[in-house]
Image (cartoon, rainbow, N blue to C red; front, top):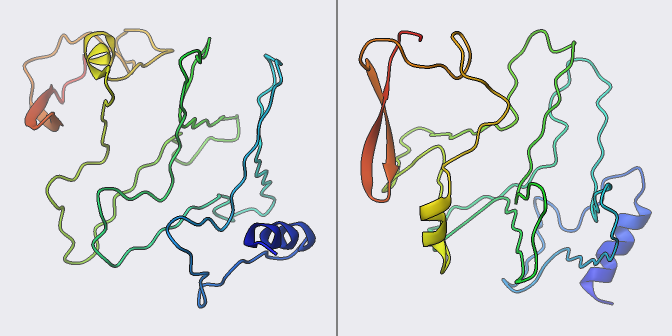
Length: 206
């Protein structure tokens, strides 16, 4: 019996309990070419209003004060890894005839606020960089790494945008304002290519 079938049966029949394939103290040892769980799906639907979702985790939190509610991808390394490492990867490939008529993304992060969110801090995307005792920052460490790749990368270089912010208008006191203040009082360091640049900022509102 293959490992894939065993996983399927355990996940299917362990309703109401924790399904485990290996444990924290006795992890399943796999070759780098093997997968603990591997699913291939295909959908030929032409429905333009309902998303095809081959995997769905739907969680409802009912206990006031509880935390979490997330699906977590956890990777630990205590060795010098190679050219890349990721705890979670989202990838979309558009073939020669593939495209999206609306907005296409490799990772969609969405949050809906309500009248109940009168306190607390909210952000659709949270980025945390943790530095333990004696941690160092390697060759170059940043809160966000953006890279344009591929044979036609120059096309983006000519026509693309660093980011798009929709739903705002330029007005005094708003998130986007025309600058009428004095010269810059602060600078924010960033890197473009291998060169450090400094984005000019002012501590006086427009």
